[in-house]
Image (tube, rainbow, N blue to C red; front, side, top):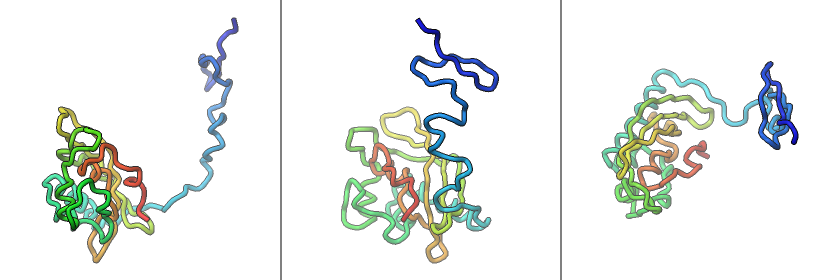
Length: 193
């Protein structure tokens, strides 16, 4: 019988599980070459919004969540930029945006999961995103039918300025939860194209 492998890290000796490769320096190993701290970050650059824009963006997000909670489909539709909402993604289509969104809010997921009831905002952090407008990370709690507990999530909401008004550039995870998706599609968290 062989003794278990050990690794020395910062002056400590710990046992590695059978089959583990050791000793390994924290900056080395199979994933060490996948990312480099010296490499520039990919993607759009971010920065801070002006005070007025930051408050306007946060207020648009509050209006959006409130309109979903009140099931005010006309208001929800008015908060999206033109062509930002693809009605084909809704479980129920009834003609235009207002009727389709109105029929879909609170729809029970196809897999039989609990239906969305409401969402509350816990915190909002808005930043500007070069070439897109603004990105908000909102910590929210979702309330569902058939559940006595809430789900806590970080929702990523993209907005852009249209005619001096901040509107949603695409549906967020909260929107998909509200219209009957058990899990929002990954595209809900990606920047708009």
